[in-house]
Image 1 (cartoon, rainbow, N blue to C red):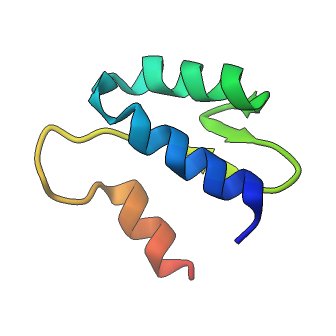
Image 2 (cartoon, rainbow, N blue to C red; image 1 turned 120 degrees about the horizontal axis):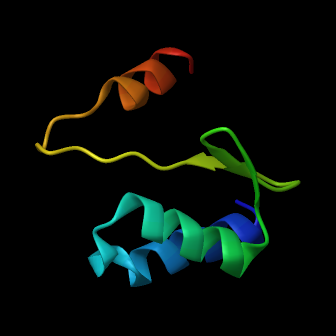
Image 3 (cartoon, rainbow, N blue to C red; image 1 turned 45 degrees about the vertical axis):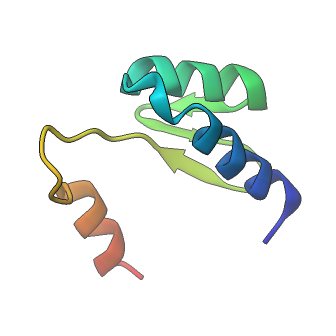
Length: 69
């Protein structure tokens, strides 16, 4: 796994308590210099999309992504 992706994962884990999708996305975008295109944030090494759920069940976005793999 590339170092920048590992740093992203660690950063998100450290900020797990934010509990606000828009705020977390903004902090990540600013900290990692990501570009936003619609609902996807990206750089040269990876792309990320933030989602939230009111329940513990996976949302349709996660299911769609897992079906595409």
